[in-house]
Length: 469
Image (cartoon, rainbow, N blue to C red; front, side):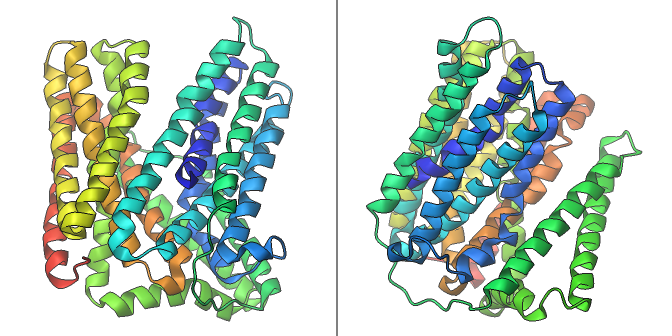
């Protein structure tokens, strides 16, 4: 149920919203700008220390994790209601603000649920718990994606009507009460916590982080790419990201010099969780972080081009929606359940290795599909195999990250790990279209499969020096 609560809002921020805005007549360039709301998921580790260290003055009888979770769930519902009552045809800026709030509170909910899941049960049962969470998450995505569009189609007409989308988003806000009910019938994890009494300093810290994030986004969007080739564009993007991080860091340093920001808060919020991880794993810590950043590389980079490939191969939108977006979800859930069960029975590291292997091999099926005739049976077979392998690898990776996380810094460390997990794959995936233009689909899918090979060697090495059972 909590997985459902996490999975439901994410597509309401992305794919469902893009359909709504397109029907409302919003320009394509403006629609794509709304994807920047996804920065909330990429940078959620920045405010995760607040969730770990600061108590909130409401719902205190529920406990620390559940009180934060209930407040966040109500804020998601409130943001969805605000989004529903505003018509983007009349005021696109208000829509942007509302959907950014949905993304921000949704990312915060993910921080809390991940921490709650890790703290609630022993490591040996994290596999089964993670697989059920992923199953709920995928069902939530199915309802928020395909379900919301089905409702829009059912209530809609040929002409754009705001009332249709208002009812869709109000319906989705009501479904968020599934997570609220799950929270109310759950129990708070039994563990001692050290809370900070420096609430004002943490509020200043939060505001400073938000401003530095806005500086990052502004500078990144202001610097245009002067190169046309994919290789030069990629390296330019890396340099641009480094420059943006430096500018944001200098801004925080400037606030410290002005004594607006406390050094102790920055140390407590970021340095101590990282120090805890480095001390625990020593020299292997860098290798582990490299594994985290590369593990989903083959899967994510391939997935960005999947829908475009299906269309250019000659498959219809209806076929893609039915077999990829609907039945594919259940294949992913099956793979996730299998991965969680396998991790519980045979251990984390062997499950992690098998997940990385089959995720890479499934990309070779797409390379074969690129050269095969357009046949719906071929499409179903490849999509099913890919989703099962993706679900298996995803469950294995969640179990592994949960095992890495220290209970002293649960929310902060897991949020940091999950952000690292997507950063590099998403960066590279942004240039996948250019690579296809140069080498074609067949070679592209082969290359994405090869991207998974370094991960296998990293897992073998780490399993010898720093295994997680």
